Image (tube, rainbow, N blue to C red; front, top):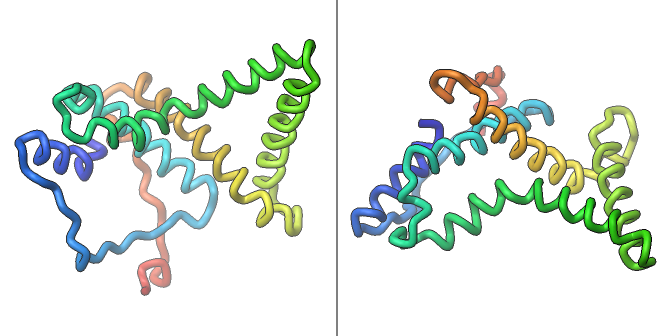
Length: 173
């Protein structure tokens, strides 16, 4: 299971216990140096959400004491890319009869063009300014790719994971 670190606390809560975070716990992680590495990491974890819901459907039932948190933090994240597309399509469809909707449609298109431009290398300054918009685009694209990987991967889902090479300085600190 890809998200065993989420499954285990949910299983503990399901049994009536509390799951707590130790404030003294230390975690060491390395972050991908490139957008592509972060994209692949998010595809894996978001595909893992679908796997979790498939293998533990009880997580989405009303008996789950943390159902609201799970839906608001995990399920809605998976729905956002489709809702953004629906928002754009709706704005475009309504723009013919309304300047307000036409303005919304233009702003949305400009936002997505800006976010794509921010991913292009070599545009000095734009990358930093557009980083939040670009991150939104990458994360939502990863959610769509995660669903695709979940639906099309034959065999164990963990096989979609590819280790990112790290250097000694990545592990320092």
